[in-house]
Image (cartoon, rainbow, N blue to C red; front, side):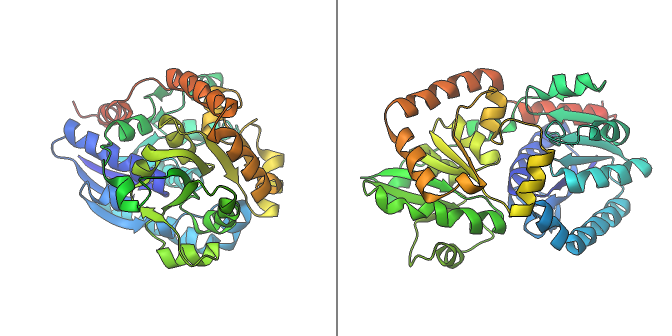
Length: 369
């Protein structure tokens, strides 16, 4: 069968790649065309558009880049129409993908959505639209099943695909030595993959590094930005940066400072105590605070249903507060409290196998027996 996938962020590229791998085991004749990144490209098929040309965060940023977004959307629709896939698989990225779902449904193309839009966070009535334009929804957060059921929509919980990716990870025993940190304790810095995130968060992440002389701070870099860019943003002559080795970094880290997003859950699965940070434009955050109806922003706390990890948002995201929270989790009771919270989180997440379960559902939904 012919599959068209749309992922607009680094996390979507990771999950899309694992899903493609699973689809190939279910369908020996699977063909792929997609918006995504290098990880999906490594699974075969044709990469039409890279996510680095699509990832804009915040209300104001989206407004300023609206022309590019609309151009990408038009190109995606035209390419889907030309390719005529048996099924369209949309991965998260709701602002873009719900428009693509609506278009595909009108064209008579089957639509599967993998990793639900976070409609439970704000504008919950979007579920009514989702019911009309999505044939099958595959959720990765356990509480989403009850949320959709409350709106009269049946969805499938497949587990969390991060468990799959981490289960497949093979650590490098020489990794610390290659970084020159084999004799030190490491704090991982994960400032995100978008330009806006990195420029707002990395300076604060590093501003307090000198206050922890016993630790080495290592940045997990996004592949679309080179080392000179990070050093310019951080106003430093040199930084210890790794690319495409985030799991190796988390595997040796004593603690982490992490941009809110998928990486917070990855960090928790690796059982690394963390400080979650987020900083957006003043207008975007003001709008979000009016619209968003959730207590937490990190996936760790949302799934746990309580504050397991500290969240430093906007004005609280500064060197002084980061220093305070990092000190608490490097040792002592703060560290133990997070690790205990991770134990409860693990029980809620369940077992690996999300990619295989989603692939089986997509193949079944597409009518292949």
